[in-house]
Amino acid sequence: MVYPPSGNGPYRLLRAVNGRAVRAFESACAAPEEAQQGRLAALLEGLRGTDFGAAHDLGGNGTIEAWRAAVPVRTHAEHAPWLDRVAAGENSVLTRAPVRSLLETSGTTGRPKWLPVTDPWARTVADAQTLWVLALLRDDEGLASGKALSVVSPAEHLRSPGGLAVGSNTGRMFLAQPWWVRWRAPVPYAVYCIEDPSVRAYCVLRHALGQPVTSWTTANPSTILLYCRRLREWWEDLRADAADGTLARGPAASLPAHLRTSLARGLGRVRLGEEPLPSKVWNLRRINCWMGGSAPFFLSRLAAALGADVPTREVGVNASEGYFAIPVDDGAPVAWLGGHLLEFVGDDDVPRMSWEVEEGREYRLVVSTEAGLYRYDLGDVVRITGWYARAPRMVFVRKAGNVLNAMGEKVTEDQVVSAARGAFPSAIGVSVSIGWGEVPVLRVAVEGVAEVALDRFDRALREANVEYDGRRASGRMGPPAATIVGAGAFAAWREARVRAGAPDAQVKDPIVLDADKWDTLVAR
Image (cartoon, rainbow, N blue to C red; front, side):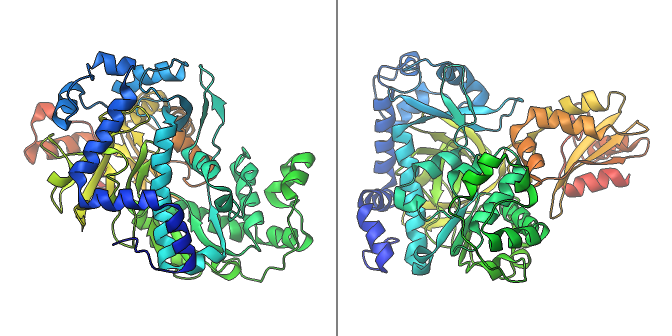
């Protein structure tokens, strides 16, 4: 049993309060068929009387086979007509439950995706988050004695045409936490709403310094590296502000006086040491972040940046669309079969249920949720690594398709092509890859130009992709770097592909490449 009744005091208390979620998890792992059929029943109940339900004739047989026959697998773009109606303020489009707000995440066609939030969906995600925290407390009672530092974004930064709040899922989850969880946060929510990324980062550090932080949670480990660099950069200003009990130096000096006074309320005087290392200012016991995909590159740098080798745990296979696998230990996360309806699509394009997948194989994740996403192709590729009871353990591998994804920005091939057409109109060929470093950049190879308009290219990508823009604004990604390749480089690439056996008519221009292939192209 992952969540035994015995254990340390904080664990036992949290387990008692959340017994329903624990029972749902354990029973789903033991009997996945029953759990997933129950999830489908809940979806169908939520669809009763909706436009989507009527359009797909969902009033009859409630089997998984009938569900698949009635509802095709759809991408976000194919969901968009329904989602646009929700954003416009229409009711009973996708769910009977009212849509409370919209979550913004990156889009694949140039505009951000807006995803609905309903109460049943929010409870499912909250249960998963609670189970993750419960496992942390089970393994380390000391986490409960300190503060939990998180890096989140605002839960609302604009309104949809229908008047719904639009914002970040991290901010929504932060505000949805019980009061006693929010009390453990060393940074007030108002700090996360500061628009300027540098000012926000300074204020986060100023509030957290001097408090007994024992855990640090954020999606991308690159964010922690960024904050470690900022800590070194602003150390003298932070030390002085901490000694004076103020928030007046460094980037915070640019805040309006009334806001600076408000945000500084409650800050005490703190004497900091000489070393600008998180392990020296906090008793860090745990780092929580993504560990799949490109994360290992950044994880390998954490110990040096923190000043100590701090244990790290995955935050799960999750997205703004939902929470799909829960980390219950330091192994791979376990599929949350008591939460959403999950399907796994292999290279053969055949959807499988969780009890039909094979260890070691990779699958594209298709999800159905109580927020109104039905057989939604998430575009995430996961690998099955093993089992807990009868539930598969899985890890995130990559985004499906041709995308540049250093830290979640998901720059797509069509976004690159559009930006390149405007920036390099006379180019013969353009190819982009990720240049790995402590601060990743996009490397752009261009043939047929004398000079490269990188500012224009960067600006176009930032306008096309909200996630890339955010990472550039915060300093987590640097400006693009260009290489002008010699004449004939792209033609030589094509010829090599044909010689290797690719059909001549089907060889595509190498717009998005991995690092090794990009290096090969540039070397020609």
